[in-house]
Every structure is written in C-alpha cells, then in structure tokens.
Image (cartoon, rainbow, N blue to C red; front, side):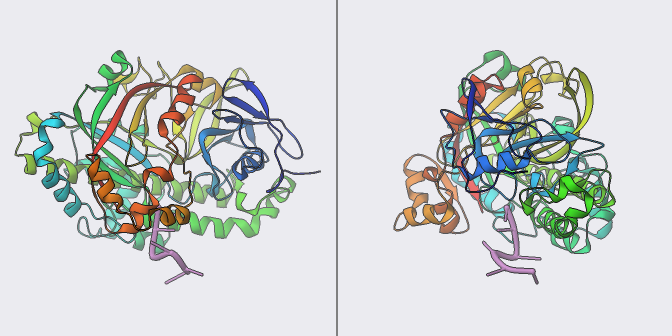
Length: 488
DNA sequence: ATGTTC
C-alpha cells in the first residue's frame, strides 16, 4: 500500500468555488478538503500533511484545511480532523505545542478616537502590567501547588472569582464556559507545573499580542448588535495561550507516544509520518494526554482571563473612568489549538467525536445550544486576528459549518514569509516607526519579534476570511483596526 | 508556539 509522503504532488480537484478535494489515495481513510482562494499549489507541504492526516485511525468524513493552512508539526496549522470518540486516535500534533492558544475580544462603551491623547499612557501601562516575551513571568504572585490545581481544573472561572475580569459573566462568554471537562491536574507533570506556576497572566512571544482596537467597519448590522459592537468603539483583543506549561505537556506526550506508535496496531504502524504520533482515545496514554491537554487548556483560559483583568484595571485607572463608563465586557473567547469531545451529525446520526482543531476556530451556527444565549440566533462569535499592521475580523458561525467542517473555521492570516526571511527584509528598518507613521503604536521587548511579525510576513487576513464568508462557513460581522499593540 | 537545542 502506498501512502502520501512529503515531496510528492498531491492530486487535487475542484469541488466548487474555493473548495478543493484531495481524493482518497494510498492509505487515506477519507478524502482531504481544502478551502483555498484559487488552486492550491500541489507541492505545498501543508497539503501533503492534509493527506497524511487522512490516515489517522478513526478519522471521519474528511481531513480539512482552512484557507490559512500552513505547514506544521505533523498536522498542518489550519487543519481540522474529527475522529470517532471511542475508536479513534488522539494526537498531540493535531493540537499543537501551544495548547488552547486562542483569542478574546473585550468590548467597551468608549469611542476609540476620543482617547487618542491618552493612548500612549494606556499602552505603556498595559505593557508594564502584562509581562511579555518568551520567558515572561511574575504578572501575579507565583501560584501555590494548590492554586495551580484549581486553575488547571477551573479555567477562566478561577481568575474571574479572584477579580480578574471585565464583567462577572466573563466565563459564560468563553467557548465551553472557559473550562474543559475531564481536566486532571495530576496528569500534568511536575516540570510542566513548575513552568506554569509563575506564568499566569503573561502574554508570551511570537504572534501573541494584546491590542487596543477600533471597530472600523460593520459588515452585518444585526449580528454586530447581538455581539455588542458599534462603529468607532474601543475594544481590547488578546491572543495568547498556555505558555510553557502547555508546551511541556505537548512535548512530553509526543515523547511518550512516538516510540509506542506501532504497538497500537497496524493502522498506527502504517502512519506516513512519525510526527502524527497518536494513541487510541481510550488507551491509558491517550486518556492521560487528553486529561493533561484539557488541564493545559484551562490554564490558557485562566491566563487570558488574568490578562483581561490587568488590561481592564489599566483602562479604568489610566483613563479615570468608572466601571459603568467603561462598560467592559467579554464579547467571546475562542480556542484555536485544541481537541474537543463534541456531538456532531455524521452520516445521518449524532455521534460523539473528538475534533482536533489546530490553527482552526470553532464556528458553531445559529440555534446551537452550545452557543451562549445572547448569540444563539446569530451563531457563535468567530474571532480571527490579522497581522499587527492591518486588521482583525469578527465573524459568526453558520449552519453550513456544522454540516461541512465539524463547525470549524480559519484562525488567522497565515504566514507568508518564514521568520528568517521576514527578519532579512526588516533589516535596517524600524518596524515600530513604520507602524507609528500609520497611527499604530507598538510596544515590544525587542526588534526581533517586530521584524518576524511585520505585516508583509503575513497573508492579508481579509482574503482569508473572504474565503470562509464566500463558502458560507462563517459570516463577516465586523473589522477591527489596531490603535496600540503590545507584543512579546 | 517554546526558560526559542534539558
């Protein structure tokens, strides 16, 4: 039996519009499906990975790729793979190193332009209070072992209860209520715990950011109203994950699963890439990874929640406004690196599935009881960050996403240039100055991250979300333009 | 993404 391998061209045929199929071949259990503006490049290694993922034991329907697909560890970023929750395989590479990396948007009642004179002071205060960079720590006092257990079990709610919040109902406005069931703090190693204990409330590095944005355009009046968005509004956007704790959980799981892969049976032994290391969902190793991954996801939610509290406090104190005048509340919080147990309609019946979303955002449609009540007529908010020099988008999930993508959408702009190539092109330039000239204040620890993260290193996220909107997978609701960016 | 090769 042949298998899809790196370096080969994958076969592609157009299904309709921007939707393309990689027909089943070799050991693929299901076809691949790729959302792409125009024909995908057949030698794109990310497409080979889409075909590789289609070999996963228990995979259902398709191996999916969103329009921001990009080569990653084993699985592509921008990929979705749903497996049978009883007989399928769980794979750490299908989640990624940054477990529950995700995005949240906090809305306010303030007009963004009106606070321009205070913008620098505000950004500087946030930059002071939210530690940034690779090894960032000490946003709040180091967690005791007992506190860390609580964070790992309770997620966002832990931080809300300790006063880190926009409003009292923040956790209800997170996907899954800001907490994954099944999380077991005891499944998180001592080393992962050590790394996490001083990192709650820290931003991290790379594409992570905390932004002050202005609602620049409304695409859908009714949905924007349901989401509490209006033109000119100041909002806070946070993109971060589970920091060193999640990295350690992923790293240890891969180290445990990779050497055992063949022992799980012929389907596992035949996987075309060792980076697809996985285990049966019900195996001891699979269950342990799931329990640790769920705990790391809860850490990430608590992390974004603490940063929310720090940012809201900075707004209140720097602007000298009351809680009521600020009117901060969480619009929504999505994870885009996670595997989740969900019920989906498969072949005419409801089935329990484990959906791996790696660089992909849940996008549940209207009427779904898993969408918070205020948004249920519209569909869940789908938060898609762009690059720091252009814009980000708020979309809404759709019924079509439920049918065609296990309720999933894209997650961001997707890299255009490697980090190295971006740095070469940034040499001799001041990216901060270039952004300042365009009215965007950026505060970052060093020049390196700014070079790696400059606009031209990324695809235009407007083109990515246009594919999702055109295919009916998510609907455009609003565009957010950055005013001030805090980076690692 | 990541105490960026414990």
